[in-house]
Length: 141
Image (cartoon, rainbow, N blue to C red):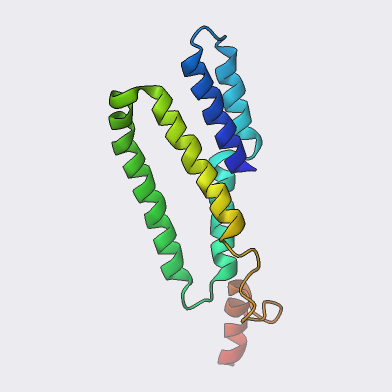
C-alpha cells in the first residue's frame, strides 16, 4: 500500500510538470496519496519486520546490516543522480525514473520475495529476549 502511494505521488508530480497550469492543490493531493498508505515509516517498519521474520538469530544481524546499507546507498545514489537527470531532461525524467523504480519494487516484492516466514525454526517455542533475561536469576540460584 505504501509503495502504491508513492507511485501515485510521483504520477501526480509528473503530471504537474507536464501541465504547469494545474492548481497547486494537486501537490496537496500528491502528499495525501503518499501518506494514505503510511508513507516511508510504514515501508521501513514492514521491511524490518519482514527481515526479522525470515531470519534466524544467527544471520539476523548480517541481514539487517545489508538492508540498512542498501537503504543508505539508495538514498545517496538518488541524491547524486537526481541533479544529473534533472540537468539532462528536467523534472519529468526524475519522476518517471521514480515511478519505474517503485513499480519494479512492487513487482519484485510480489513475484520474487517469499511471503512466508522461515519455517525451519518453531516460533511458538522460541523465547523472547525479555523471557530470557527474566530466567537468568532463576538459573543462578
